[in-house]
Image (cartoon, rainbow, N blue to C red; front, side):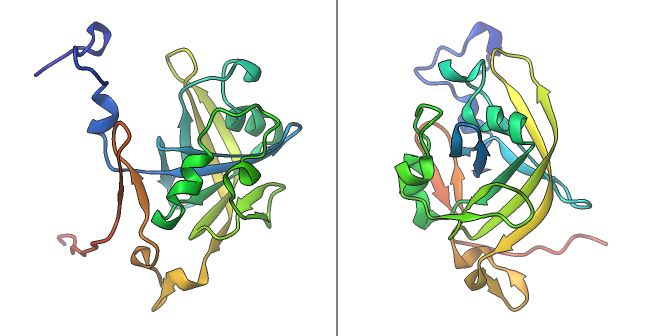
Length: 199
């Protein structure tokens, strides 16, 4: 099968989200005039080592947020955000935080996520996440499409949960990272192997 996106695919569900998988989930926490916010984004990744930088993309809008969603609106306002890494054990809490709630709703409370304060920025974080990355906004890039924005941030602080540190390494097998597939599907990382690069 071949299709041009602008002409449609003819399938009952859009296959694009299922092609680029698995995708890590950035559980983005923010603070703004409307209060604290927590929402998962699967268009998320690290983009540089030195200095460490991350990005996530928001691709839809809410009527009460002027063409975007709560996360992007609050990052525009506060210039900071936190990326919380999602583990399999938190799948239901993460999913509960994904609802389209009014801007005044605190998803930490709504979903039952444990809140803690960040250290280098004025922002909440998920207290029991395997890792949290405190970030200062570096850029918001408007992408083609009605409500598409890519948000970039420089990491100013890193929280690592103690039980995820083994033999001097951050060990993903300690918490089973949750990954986004397509449609309603997710996966958890349970098998890990190493490869040596040539040279």
